[in-house]
Image (cartoon, rainbow, N blue to C red):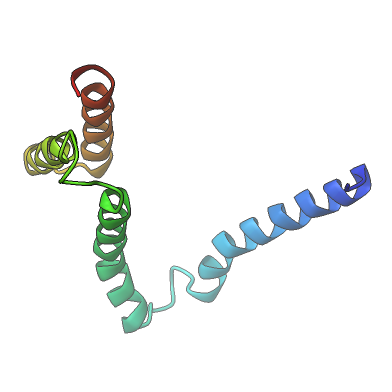
Length: 109
């Protein structure tokens, strides 16, 4: 069991590390300094890689052999795709897809 002093130290360290991980890129690459090409490349490809990993993670437990056979997931993915093609806004697409999926699994399936 941790004491209150240990908990305060842990929370302070977590706060410091969280702050540093977000602040260090601004110190390493200030606005007047050119950003390295590999950082620009990572900025272009990482969002798509992360989205792909999230989709695979979300679908890893879906069984097409048992009811509901992945139908809510399929409908939600189609909805997210259409919503993203229409609005081109990631937050709206993810939020809309999540709401539809939760509605489908709670009420329909």
